[in-house]
Length: 366
Ligand SMILES: Nc1ncnc2c1ncn2[C@@H]1O[C@H](COP(=O)(O)OP(=O)(O)OP(=O)(O)O)[C@@H](O)[C@H]1O
Ligand SMILES: [Mg+2]
Image 1 (tube, rainbow, N blue to C red):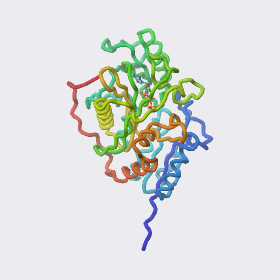
Image 2 (cartoon, helix red, strand yellow):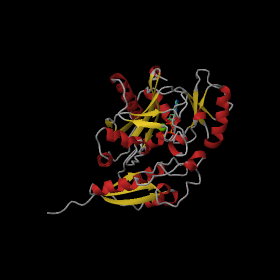
Image 3 (cartoon, protein in one colour):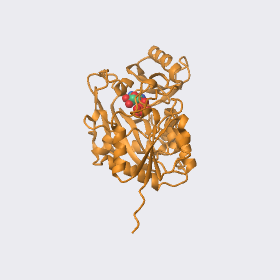
């Protein structure tokens, strides 16, 4: 009897994020980006051990702009792609997908189009509007003294268009009047480029983790971020300090709770908004949809294609929301990784095209 060959899995990770990397943060990093941290402690080893325990032959491949050509020489059955740069931050993202597509190697996570749309919040919002996904009303400011759309209602929220990890977001991001808005724009635009100004959504914050392509989606129970007294009542948001600064009271000042306690109708509208947002950008592989429940119902802030999968034993606060949601649904981390690989292997070799969505101009909800 012949034994089946073990599946060869190449884990592509951003070189600078590896716990043992001596590499400095990318030199192109803007503002807070230079202070983000990569995979912490054992989170990365955890994934490697889980893949090995599945019986896969695991190969680790560190990728940055200087080593992108490692993909050209790669032989494996499937790649687990953990490279999530946005180019402007000095880390490759879409370039990794291009190289994988060119080699015809199946890979986990978002394909090129969804990844590219998802790496810019303004691009995403255009797709949300087209598909009728509820999202806060907004304006993009190329400079700080541009005329303000009179339809925007304070409080407003100022953030960079294309960063992640709350880079460029602080308690000063919420502004209650024009003077504060101009000040914040003056701080954000020189560092990060054009700023996205949205209406501030007062209300609970949730995130919905999704695995799958097209209509074949597993949607996990919503995770709620519950902000404690370290946060001012007027600004319960995830700042850069909340995510990356252990010395800040904001860092341990919130909890993750899953499944979020929601009424049946409320949960349905949250799940539907998350599904519609994911599909509106041609969501593929896996991702997380961030939203807040405002006075008019859920308002989608963004989709995070290829969101972080980091898991830490112990305090749930140290893990990322995706694995927290999957675990709450009874999945093990091995179940998650296996499913990500199954989705990759089942995929059509032709890169996914956008779903045909007729513009829904008359049903737009802000
Ligand atoms: N319009 C808004 N109203 C209220 N709060 C907001 C708004 N936009 C963003 N926030 C707050 O800022 C945080 C960061 O915003 P957002 O999720 O858009 O950025 P990000 O940096 O891409 O995050 P991620 O780490 O998920 O990639 C949100 O989690 C939320 O708390
Ligand atoms: Mg977010």
